[in-house]
Image (cartoon, rainbow, N blue to C red; front, side):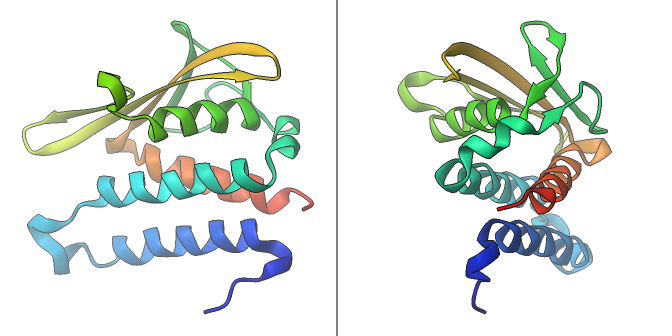
Amino acid sequence: MKYNEKALAKDFFNRTIDIVNQYGKNRMVYKEKYYDTTLFINCLFGMVIMPKANWYNKLSKVTIPKKSIQGVKILKGKAESEVNLKELLHCMRNGLGHWLEKNSQNLSFFHEGQQITKVTLWGIGNVSNKELKLEIQFDIRNDGLKKFMEFLQVKINKLDW
């Protein structure tokens, strides 16, 4: 199906969330091969790359208050912190894009038994002429990855492209 070229980012984000929701409805079909965290990381990568490539500078106007996304912690240093969407996506893009490159450990999966319980992403970037290092923790038990992507979808849909 063709993308809406006048609202490509919005269309891409909306389709990505549709894919996530469609997959979630089929949990019983996949049973032990239900890899929702893997799908969410793949979808997240696309959602992080798309705005960086096309609409990067508009994202600095969107502030993400600390503790505003259930199941997600955004840390600067050791403390939860407010960031803007440009800073967050820049650091996330670097963290995901350079995962395991030159032995960097930018992405970690924590589990209990066979269940992934938490995903942590570290990203560094020079954003608006300042060095920034962020740690983003996604609590999988509280749907942190999915809620984060839904949060991005809402923010992107509100922006005037």
